[in-house]
Length: 316
Image (cartoon, rainbow, N blue to C red; front, side, top):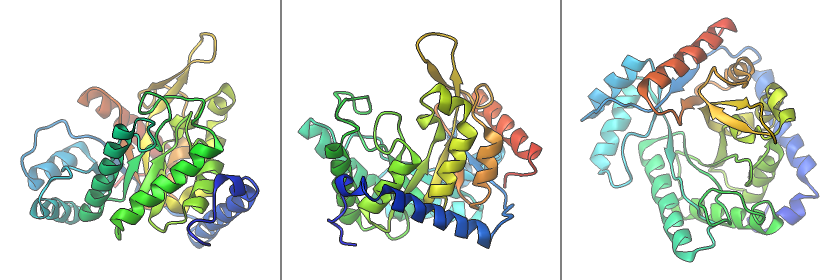
């Protein structure tokens, strides 16, 4: 397919085909490896101050992590990047992701230019260090860099996301990593099907999937059926998923519908389903985030490991 032929306007007519393609790929992967039981990989931030790759690895090992966030910034020298990559490889730690958190579809031109530059720099860093992916949100047409807007979920913005993402990937030309977009409740991609549409429309081999299921639990129906929603995500997107986030969500008893992100184990996310689905795609990292203290990460990790054990899985 040509790089300029697919937009949301045409994809609205072909989304079922795209979803079927994605489902077929996942089904093939499951048929090839129906009982994948490779150890899962858990990671999170390191609160301990570290000065070199060896201390970084030691801190990760102390926490029991086999996956990590990128430990260096875009301005790191090639020698420093290589030293951390080598240390991770020798310790069998996967560098999961490099964040590019910014708004590359901002209405403010200065903000947009700065965001695009950040995305290019962070994607280049992910490629240099061999991270599984560089991750960002698609952005927002609101005044906030990540807030809701009536213009976010429109054909015009879908097309803007397609062209913007292509431009970032084409400028960097990564060979070892993938550029990914985290699903959001009020911006594309906002569902497994809209992610399938973006994969088809962007049409770049180095565009992949980042999965944070909490971000698309946006109603009581999805909250109580989140196990099925997680299964749908892996069925349609599984082979393209490069990294996942581990959070939790709680439906509150207040009107109107009010959903809060909470520490894993204190909400309603079906972690048994999440971990079983994740185990079908070995070496896909599960990264905890958004907690304020090291002790909270310890609590979250203990819960996630406990669920894994209860369903016959383990972490590397």
